[in-house]
Image 1 (cartoon, rainbow, N blue to C red):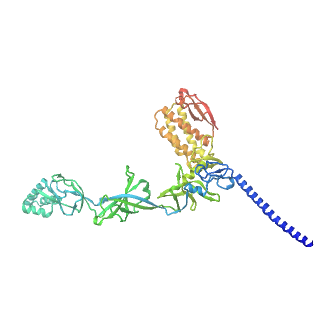
Image 2: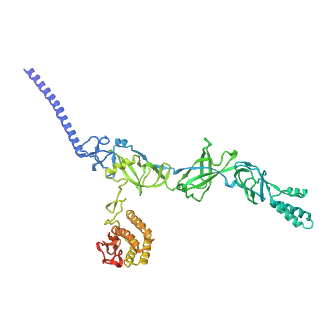
Image 3: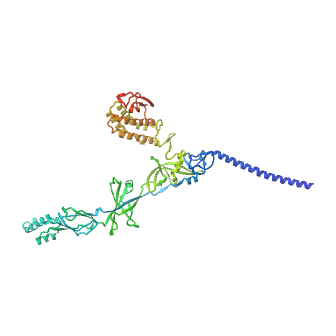
Length: 584
């Protein structure tokens, strides 16, 4: 009985241990599952909205696939993600599907490879004109075609000259009296020598006592005939060109430099080039001259490289392709990015800078200042630092996603101006006060004085005084000092300045007061908006309106007088109109 009790006790203890173990397994697993479920539910609550990285307009209440591209949806960004609110985030898979690749900004050697095209030309310094030193008719001509080679001293033509016949007759007569009149004899002899008749030929005439009717002309230089000017039987004057001869022992290579590349190329630069008709051979030379004039039709100037031409390897009119490696002169390190990384809005250049987080890659728009173009790259003067990563390919895909997500993008960039968000691509108008600066107000005062003078002259129908005020007004636009503006205020002022310039450049040419009044309306509207933006005046001004102006279409103007004095109708209806707004 005692043994049975002991066995029973042992079985009870074992059963209890097994029960405890099984209980721990069941209840412990249930607790873990419940914890996982709670965690999952919490995460789902945190990410109640799911979207597509490529198509941010897609919004769903849970995970799934994008109905447009089929990509996995991702949780919409929240403030817990610690991602820049102006950045657009993409997962690695989204970047692959969008074809996005990045480029790490690095330093550049600052060398620009400028391609040049040109051709071989005759060296103008080695072109000579073979002229006739004897007036008369060409009886024989030995040079018959262009391209023919002429050797110095070679007979090139025979000329019959009545004047030379008379001179020979004078020679014989002077010779017969040379003892009595030696000076006459020498004078006639010199006359023949001026016609390049040699002493031997003169002596032969004296010895034979025969007058020669035809005299030879010999080549003065050696070279190739590039232009033939006379034919057999032509009459020529003394000094008239028979043909032009070029010495091709040296030639010019004339390269065309486009206007946009003029600042890069200078005298002394080395040009490496090849000749189309000499494949496999490479040549180089230094630029000895750059044409100071640009062809108004082709917008190019010529750069000259002078080269020796042994064996006549280079022939005029051969096509040549070359390049110049020009280096940027800069006192600081030069950084560059590929052209594909840069987008233009017409006013600024922007890139997307990448930042990697545990949530994926985020991209934020950044404005940059571009320098010169180096082949397929752009120099970055300001806005980026070496080591940063920018989107190289797929830039427009990133920008499209940013636009759809309402983030700053190429067409929608915002900045903070004194606590107010301002769209820098649009003009700040109406009641947005972008500046409250005494220096700005002081600079704008002369502009307003001349505007009010113009208004006053129009109310009095005084065209001459109105024209003087307008000319002063136009001058004062340019006199406003841009340095007193902040960056954001300057953008606003420049916009108004541009509008005013567009109006005044035509208005100052008008010769009729009614046409001037029509142009005045546009000027007045800009001045109203300028006043609302900057509020530069100490005294109140008045926005006034006349329904009968502008052919009964109505027109508005800015006045410094509370009472109505109409500049559009003048003395005809001076008090027509009403005040619509007071700008204090």
